[in-house]
Image (cartoon, rainbow, N blue to C red; front, side, top):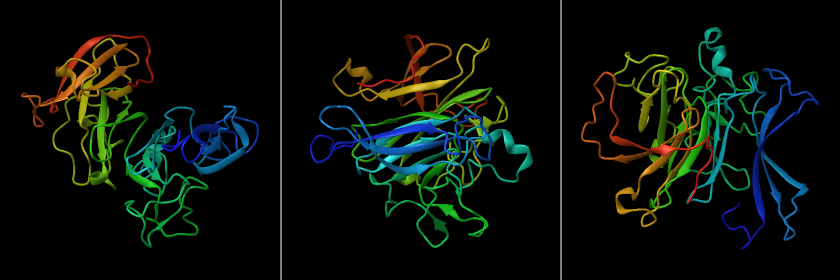
Length: 309
């Protein structure tokens, strides 16, 4: 819902998959389905007016039918923040010199930030002469623009499957945690604020605190890469390997020791965890590294994909 829904407007926002180039949903880099962000009017009858659709953004064709992302959140600035997964494009890695998720000329593997009407906020990281709008095709047309031209919608990059993004409603600024579902070794959540604008969160070169698919090749991140806020390793037996739902605990709702905690669920292991900043054992140089958050297992829940208070 628009933050002023029912007050000054009746806009609702939907991110969905659409067979733009025909009735088939067969994936591929050419003429495959796309993901689309639109807004619709929801009258007082609460029956959505499909003819009121205003298309705000579309991705390129989906290479695979996985890693879609798709969390929509309005920030304190009343701009739209949207997570977009890599769409399976990471599997093309070996044939390209640059990943789609780190190429700021493509919307896959990004968190984007646009206005409620689909425009570009003035303080987005890419608004200069070396940037263009990408809302119609999801990428820069390099036959018309120089290599290195950036999409103005992109806020941060370097995500695999940013399945859920959660807003810290008690922060006096826009602060989000993005749960990025890992590959074979690690799960991670990353902090995004205005101060991280333009950052690269390191997928596919990094997974969690280490090199992709590794549990020992860790250490400091390369210059220009942003480390995740917290991570955990896949346990033996594959009992936990998909960090999905997440939510910040508002102060006063639970016992005081949970104020400001971040809750998240592992979809495969059915685990409900809480993390809290201030881990006395924090060690980025250890092997494996230990984050600044203390992680506590609260219990088991069945395949949760969304949480809220």
